[in-house]
Structures are given as C-alpha cells and as structure tokens.
Image 1 (tube, one colour):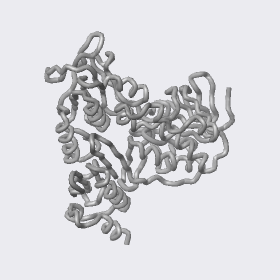
Image 2 (image 1 turned 60 degrees about the vertical axis):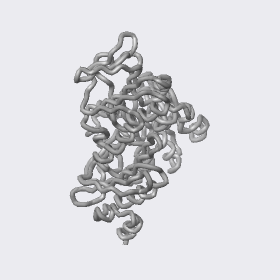
Image 3 (image 1 turned 90 degrees about the vertical axis):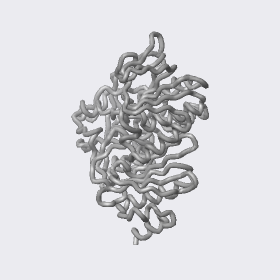
Image 4 (image 1 turned 120 degrees about the horizontal axis):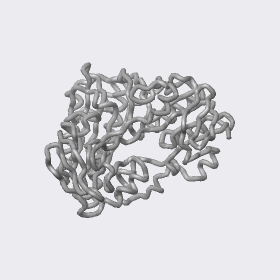
Length: 415
C-alpha cells in the first residue's frame, strides 16, 4: 500500500512532532505523515526525570498534543510504524509492516538511544535506564522511602534522578567512571558546586570508579565495583549517556559524523532529506565547529527551522544553545557551550545563586551557567545568551562585578 507523496517524518518525538506542526504553520497543505514506534503519541521528555518520578504528573499528562490536534491538523500519526529502510532512489520509506510511504521531503528525527550497561547482571530485574515513558513507569515504582538506589553515571540525568530519589526518601549512591561529574557539559568549578549540593542532601558520590558487575539472582541485590567494594542496593539506574539513532541513515548512504551530518540548514547530503534534534550534528557559526546537542530547546528550535527549509526557505540555524535542569530547590540554566571555555569567571547572583561565565582562549564569552534560584539567575542567563550570540569579548573583572549590569555590556556590544 502506498500513499501520495508527502512530508514524511521518521521519529515521533519532540522534534518530529513540532516539525509537523511547523509545516502546517508555514503553509504546507499537503500530506504530513509522522512515523513513531513507541506505541504512544509524542510526549515531552523532561518531566520524566522530575515531575513523573516525583508522582506530580502522569505520563499521559506529558503528551505534546491531544488526539484532536492530529485530526484537526491532518497529521497522519502512526505510533506503531517501525521503519525498515529508506529507499532514496524512489523516495520511499519502507515499513516493517511491508507497507511503504512516498515522500516529497523526508525528515529524520529519530533522536538518541540510551547507552546500555554491558556487564554481568545488567539484565536482572531492578536494573533500569530512563528515556521513555515505559522506562519512567518502571522506575517510579522503585522509589519508595528507604529503598537503596544505585545510579551509574553522574551526568544530568543521573543527578536529576538522584535528587528525585532523595525527595522520595530513598538512599542514593552515584557511581561515576570519570574523575568528576558532568565532564562534557560544564567546567569543573560548576560541576563541583552541584556535587557539593548533592552531598549536602545525603547523596554518596564516588568518582573514578567502575561497576564490574551487578549482583543478584532473581533480582538485583547490589553492585561490585572495580576496587572490589560491594554496595548493597534494591535498584540500579543507568545514566551513562546516549548515542544518536543513525542506523537508518547509515544504511541509506547518508553521511554521518557524530550523528547524521547536516549543513547549517539541517539538510543532509541528500537534497530531499533533512535531520533534526538529538540525532544530527551541524556546523555552528558561533563556535566554529560541528556540534550535536541533546536537549529540549535544541529539538524545539530545530523543528521550526527544518520545517521552513523543507519548504525551501533556505534559512540557516545559529541559535545559542540553552538548557535547564531542576535539582532539589535549585535550577541550573546553561546558555552557550560552557565546555568550550578555558577560563571561568564567577558572579554572585543572589543569596544562594551564582553565574559561571566561560571564556575561550581569545576571551570570547562562549557559555554561562546559572545555578540557584530562578528569580536570581534567569535574567542574567538570558542576557548572557545574547552576549554569546554577539561573540562578546568582555573583561573577566567586569563579568565578576555584580555592580556592573550585563544589560550595560549588551548595550555596549550592540552600539
């Protein structure tokens, strides 16, 4: 069975669903086919590690749109449509069901898959990772008062789950193979600030340590570390990163470089195929290198641009990255790419808040990490985002001086 040529989107996640909406908003009146394989309609992922695990929100409430939206917007949403391969020569997407869908333009928004533990015991009941609503539903039942939770990985997902588990009354140990937390995300001084807060809340964190095996017979009962130490636990949650889902693209001969390689319009080496969100890497003019981002805001921004470019608008993507994380009573907001900095300057932003500015070798502001109360950091992080967009070169002493307003610096840059 074939359908008439359409805008076809593989991946019914944040970027795919928003791109479908944006195609309608930008005037596409033809067929839109949105292919997913999770068995559920597109949903928002950030609440999974926070509100859902805390019991404040159901997975149903995470849906991006209700059923009426897809009907009214004439979006053909298929939630059990696994893709077998992409036929570039005939511009068709072949489904596992044996059906095929013809495309006018194709968007690959397949996102990323969690890296799985590869060690003895990793398939025992009680061992989890968090990426999907099904994962969240499996974990939420583990987080009851007194439960001993071992988290493998001190990235943002691991630390968010640790904070949530503490709030649910659990005892938490975090094991990280690297020498510090958030190695690829923020400068060391920012990571140390967050780790100290976790330790104050009762989380035990061990760095430079690997898990050799997960112990248990019918269910996990503990982990054995590389130094021989054994930690008893009732549940193991892995947060060891993700990898972009590039298999379909690679099999179709589409270029891949730390994700599907796209240009600054999000087009692949095939002029009829685009990619967006976590799955793709793209050249960024501000940072003068190819990057790949794994965050909600990037998925949203990509969706808007890629929809217009599927309609031949030819717009380039150069948004300043922005990311947030909620842990305990803290909010972390990050603008730019702090990990690209070589020097960090700290500004006190309030009674218990700080902004960490990251500068590159030329003194150009490349990142800002605000940690503390939203009311004390949000405005400065937004202003820093605008300064990063202008590749502002600012004296560290001015950044550190709370009496010198960032808005003044921005005004000076604009003028």
